[in-house]
Image (tube, rainbow, N blue to C red; front, side, top):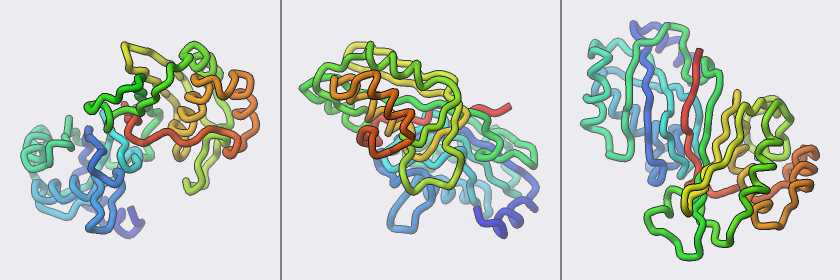
Length: 258
């Protein structure tokens, strides 16, 4: 949000916080785009304007990429609209497309920011194992055909936990911020053909999860040893890590606040 717009918005009476879930398949990410390119933010702001009766500009906890999904994205906006907060989800959901849903709405403090007030986030990455693709999984997981060595992948995941410099898994083009992040939990579970990896941290760098997953899959395929994975991590060199995993397997799971 531009500083001048932020000043205008903050003069309004109410600061509303929403929990939002969406299927990112048909959108060019969350962040607002110039039409005809459509992002989740474009659609959500348009429908909120109809419900609240004034121009809406959202702030979001994270800017998910094209094809990435969210189970609990958090946004906030300022409005002079008088609609009771408990009626906002039903009112907005009645006019939103079915792949975007407002889960909850709250009255927030004046200083609350979905982005700047966030203390931690968790992401999930899903892999579908099998030589025969599942058409119902194609938009919601990465189909990796050869059998993965999940034990080796889990060993690498445990080494990711703690405070480290994650420059080796940082994509170019992100904001100029410190590459040091604290991963509280990095875990893997498998149910049938689905492998889920969960990453819970105080923050994430641009494409960090997808770059970690791409490198972990190389470990699972036997192309990269656990020792080599640790060398890549310590090198702080993105060119040594694996390719970026596809977007459709990634989900913003939860954003946490104090």
